[in-house]
Amino acid sequence: MNACAQMDVVPASNALSWGAALEGVRHDFYHEAAYHQFCQAPGDGEAYLAVYREGESVLLWPYLLRPIQGLTARGHCDVTSVYGYPGPLAKVEPAEFAADFVSRGLAALQEHWRSSKAVTAFTRLNPVLGNQVLLEAVTPIEENGATVAIDLWLPEEEIQRGYRKTLRHEIKRAREYGLSVRLDEGLLKLTEFVDLYGETMTRNQAAASYFFGFDYFAALFRALPGRARLFTVCDGETLVAGGVFVETDGIVQYHLGGSDHRYAGFAPAKLLLDEVRLWAAARGHRYLHLGGGRGGRRDSLFAFKAGFSGRHFPFFVWKCVLQPAIYDELCRLHSRLPGAAGAAGAGGYFPAYRRAAAAP
Image 1: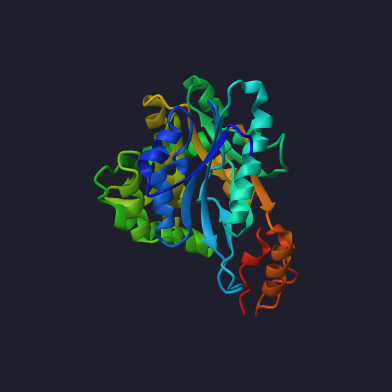
Image 2: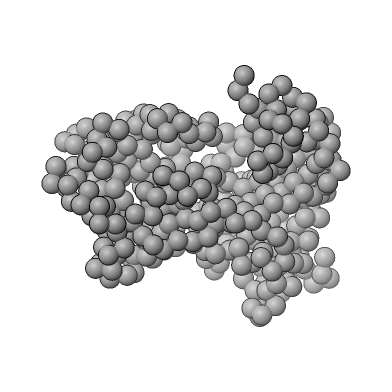
């Protein structure tokens, strides 16, 4: 590590120090202590913010440290990221030395992770912030599809031209039918929304990791008060669609949503996104980020979102094997488990030793 460098690791429980480190650095809610506290609560790992400094330059890397259970009794762990779009942030002075600074900071961080007995490290990157530029010059990164955003600073006519013609027709039909979109500030429809969300995940045969219950959503709204918003679409008082959106520094993230299949002909989810777009634009935000397809694929979910905008951001992930010999050993142990899907690493899953066993 550079002689003038300083490395600190801040736990999410120290929200004041975490927030002070983020001050003056553009970020998303996925980088904040409150969201990391929320994500570590179910036992998904211990949350930390690594802060690497050289003078006025700073590299910030939020992460979860998870124990590797069942395969080793030697206290090994791995590094991962929260659900969503986090990744590193940096403020570099002077900017032209960014690659050298990030390279030194990443090396110092990897050394710290190894000393913590971490075997691998992984993070998703933030498409809107474009933080892949911090890494692409110093370490391999992997493109994993694209995400869709609506540029809210464009003139209304231009935004409307970016909508597919059929989409404009469907939204108009939903309004004419009488569906109404509301900001549920009192969370009066939260229980109904959670049920609807669960039904939607079941209908779409979503992975188990996408199933969240009432406690998850209630805790999310407590963690991000006044920024996590529940919008509902109702036919009278009957909930037919809804979504959770989070505001941060000019970005509104579409976090999770669901809809009633019986109203598919009236496209309530499309009406929802159009109304949230108008709301977000009125509040001065730059982007409504809709996210991408399942697992980064250009599937039907991606096509649904792309109907709103041609503004697509490349989505990247970063993967690193910190201790290759131990990684290979864990993969071998995993491959012997009942239901293990072939050779460890098949299908590009990372880390391979965490790939779920196949159903019997």
